[in-house]
Amino acid sequence: MKANVPPQALVCFSEYNHSLKPVVQFIFIVLFSMTSLSNIHAQDLGKILHDSHDVFKEKTITKRRFGHQTLVNRIEVLKQHKLFDVSVATKSTEGRDIYLVKCGTGKIKVLLWSQMHGDEPTATMALMDIFNFLTGEHFQKTPENAPFLSLFREDLLRKCTFYVVPMLNPDGAEAWTRYTALGIDMNRDALALQTPEGRLLKQLVLDLKPDFSFNLHDKNRLYSAGQSGNLSTISFLATAFNQQEEVSSNRKKAMQVIVGMNQAIQSYIPNSVGRWSSEHEPRAFGDNIQLWGREWDGSLILIESGGRKNDPEKQYIRKLNFVALLTGFQSIINKSYKKNNLKEYQALPENSRAIFDLIIRKATIRKGTITYQADLAINRTERPVKGKDYFTTSAAIEEIGDMSVFFGTDEIDASNMEIITENEIALGSKADFQIAKDGKVVYTVKNGVIQN
Ligand SMILES: [Zn+2]
Image (cartoon, rainbow, N blue to C red; front, side, top):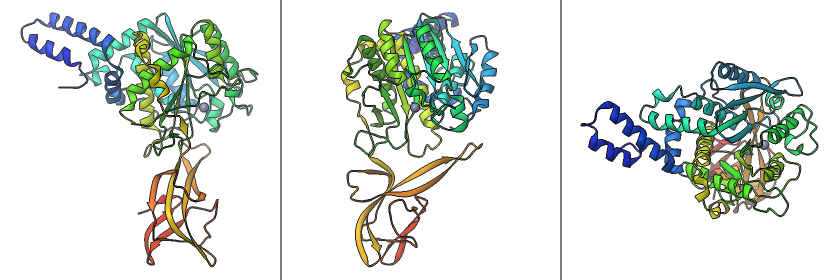
């Protein structure tokens, strides 16, 4: 049995399959699909979306570093599609177009923006995939899911109006920096409003009064979900609007939607979904939008993409964004989020910094005439190559000593082994050395990467 078809539909349908005429069969499919649409659990919808994501994946974007022109090219395609109402919402400081893409005809207003920080593009990729999903043009490539997904899509567009600003900070995206071209962190500009991009965001929120806002970011890839060795691949936050971290009606809804999104992705990244501390930052947009939203019961949800082993281009994390957002929308249109327990939100582990790229444990180190035993914690720092879509990395020793409370994405047990290097082992020194046992090299570490 295919897991992506609701089991009750299969059982019922197969009993009648041979005797009913095609039209009646079609009605049955529609009825069963509609039933399943309202009842389907976040995990089941998550699985369908997860397994069919490749069909919707925007093929012109395969790496996380892409510039404004890549977005412009996609926008030109969307403009040709009658579903989308595309406008230039404003110009960035350096004169680049910032777009607002509107689609759907429903009463529920959903506002999403990505890449407020220029070097945080994962959700922008997922938004391009969601646009592809919403066109409805790709369902034939996933025939077993097509009847269900097609109804889901229609339901979304009938019940919601989506307002999407992909790449809110195009100047930062071009320069691969967090900041806008003025050197301002837009997420500290919600009160001062010195950036044209920040002014646009505030204006959109106050004009539209969205029922749900999604604030989409990336975070340092080495955050852990709790004090653990699990990377916080995705983290959520129902941002607090005051220092007391009060749970108002709109903030509570944000927490409940997050519970459903977590259920949808948890099985793919077990224990790697985190939660930010809800500490209030009065200058940030998320905090203020949650505050302003109290007026019309509008909820704000923060989603941050972190790191995942063997996913340097964050293409799997892009898929998780696609799954989380669409399941979030589904819980909004059928109001299933209302059943979600806030305890599940509170139980998400808070993000922490417990992980290094590489930890070498209990190595014997020589320094002049002194010999000692220590752990070495190494991180690889990434630097963008100007005008290119790739990065260089340089790895350095960040900590020396007892690292027993920390975790490495990669680890070497170097008990009874000795570090061999031309350079002295020191804080900040390059992570290039060999590890030998009884004079025989067992591991070679080059630029922080184990070679063998
Ligand atoms: Zn950010």
